[in-house]
Length: 320
Image 1 (cartoon, rainbow, N blue to C red):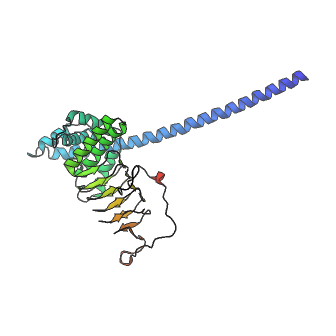
Image 2 (tube, rainbow, N blue to C red; image 1 turned 45 degrees about the horizontal axis):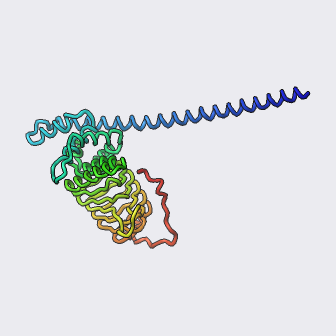
C-alpha cells in the first residue's frame, strides 16, 4: 500500500509536470506567434516605405530627365539626381552639397557629410513622409523635383535629422558635429532647430525662414509649421522646458509657443499667437492664450471661457 501510494504520488507529480510543461510550451508558441505577427507587421511597414520611396524616386528621375538639358540646371540635375540610385542617395547628395558650402570658417567635408546622411536616413521613413506631406499640403509645390531640390524647409528638416543622429551618439565630439550642422543650417536657411529636438514624419515647414525649435521640443506626425514660428522656453526653466506638439497640428506664421506645455492633436495656433498654456486637442488658439471653440461657426465664434477643471493630456500617446 505504501508503495502504491508513492507510485500514485509520483504519477500525479509527473502528470502535473507534463501539464505545466504543456502550458509552458503553449505560451512559448503563443509568444512566437505574437513575435511573428510583430515581425510581419514591421516587415509590411518597411515594404510600404520602400515602395513609396521607390515611387517617389521614379517620379524624381522622370521630372529630372525632362529638364536635364537645361543650360542652367542641367549640371546640378545630373550630379544630384540622375547620378544617384535611390531616394536616400538623392536627399543625401542634395543636403551634403549644401551643407559643405564654406559660409563660415568651419569646413564640413562633403564626402563625409554624404556618408553621414546616408547612414542617418537609410532606415528612416520620415523623409519620404515629408515629401508626400509637402506635395499634399503645400499648394505651391508643383513637383517632387522642386521639393527635393529647392524647398529649404525640407532641406532644414533633413539636415536636422542627420544632426540628431550625431547628437544621439552621446559623445562630446559627436555632439559638436551635430551643433556644427545646426550652425550651418542656421547660416544657410535661417532655420534654427536643435539637434536634440524630436520631429515626427510628414512635417511641412513652409517658407521656413526664422523658425526656431528648442532642444527638448517634440513634434508629432503630419504637422504644418509656417515661417517665424518659435517653439521655445520661458527663460525660467532648465531641463525639459520646450513645447510638446501633438499630431496634425498647424502652427501659423509668427506663432510663439513657450514652455513645457502640450498642444493637443489637431489643434491650430493662429498667426502671431502667443501660447504659454496648454491647448486641448482640436482647439484653435489666437492672440494671447485665447481659445476658440471649433464647433461654433466662424461668424459666431466666441472666446471659450476658462474651465474650472484642469485639462489633462497623455503625452505618451504622441507618435514622435
